[in-house]
Length: 296
Image (cartoon, rainbow, N blue to C red):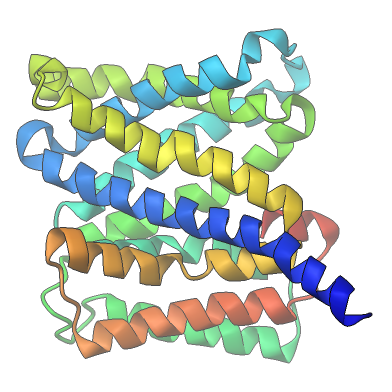
């Protein structure tokens, strides 16, 4: 490879890498804004706002009514939508009492488990052990890690479980419905979780002090990053994409510091490093079947 072709390749990769970093920053800034709304409408209200407004945006973009729904794939699509809504709701429940960086690190164990589930080599068990070590440092199991709330931490792990199912069933649903799957899943999630959020939060959810921030959360946490990630994924090697995505817990922690004044302890930073290291290591070394590779 000549120097000029190598330079062109670097320039070609620079834009999608930048777009992916912007997408991750956007998601975590959206999460920080969402946390400021909890005193007004609670986690259920924020979930309803994000899912409802995201649904409207994604329906307008992807127009899923133009895609025929396969009868054999309805169950996968339904579970995909349920796990999408559950992932959002549990994430916000965890965020009420746990720092943003810790919540994202705990939630990140879901896709990490999906990436590792088909692997059997010795090096892969090292990454599993490293992730478990990070969990041990993050969860309040007999040691003090900055007063992390156990119920909130368990909600974050629940969100991670939903994320893993979201990947697996999203793969099945997306195989037939393509990009419209995101809009269809968002519609299912909104139809289930929006009524509950409206019931709990009441009419306050439509107030002028809440609605603009809710729209910002929907755009920053869903519409904008989904679009940017789709562009990046089509232009980056899968391994590069997954490696960069592994940095999300660190970006979440920095967002928590900048916007929420959530400063983590050295032990929590070590735990985040373990989870990020396990994710990057798994991405770079795991040999998985093609289906698991895509899920990762």
